[in-house]
Length: 307
Image 1: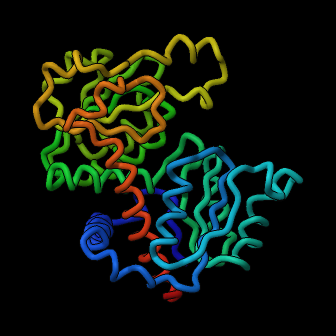
Image 2 (image 1 turned 30 degrees about the vertical axis):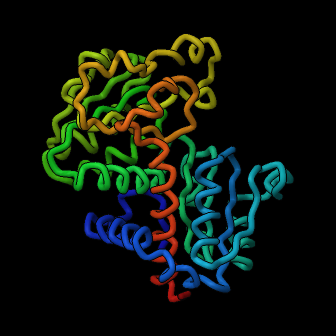
């Protein structure tokens, strides 16, 4: 039974296939409106979420299926001490596919090893967030027409940002990608990501603390929030939380066709004054996330022989 825990579970050909399906869904939505009738998606969210949970639910409903699940651990048997493995086995009796978010790294893998239906990792701690990366890829594809030759700036919390780690893994498999890593010293990209992904594949990257100096070279600017929930020390969070705030003034030297992405939720790292700038793509990402999750649900259910 195939599950999706990491973006690397997909080949480049499969990523391109998912993007093609999503683009077809956008153009021919009626064709897909009943394809999952009688099928159920379980959303097991042990951690708060707005976009990811609702977009999974919207995706399944727009495919003609149904949804069950919970949106906080306190409303599940996890509050009584039930293990992830037992939860996965139980929910497999009710649903055809599972989307799970959990604060602990590796939780989705444990679930997939015990479920009898496909499991989709909807974010596991600071590890990775493959379906956000699918949303990011579709957004970049629609904005730029492709991935090869892009200079991608990643700004903010690169240490704990699971969306950043997943996006680097995905884009690193395309040609002539160049990364600019913009963060405070304390929130730099983990050395294992640099070693295992960037250096291993000879992908050029630069590290800087200066967003404005990096701006003129960027085709993509991927902003992230500093995540309070990943800090052990409130004092460190408060010191770092406003390290980068993107304002119109900071875009004065940016390319006219720059694409600004953000996995959301936004706190204050992007000024609302940028929301109407044609380069702002972060709410387009939200919509693209629904289309890519529709494509992913279809792929996994087809491979499982369920539809």
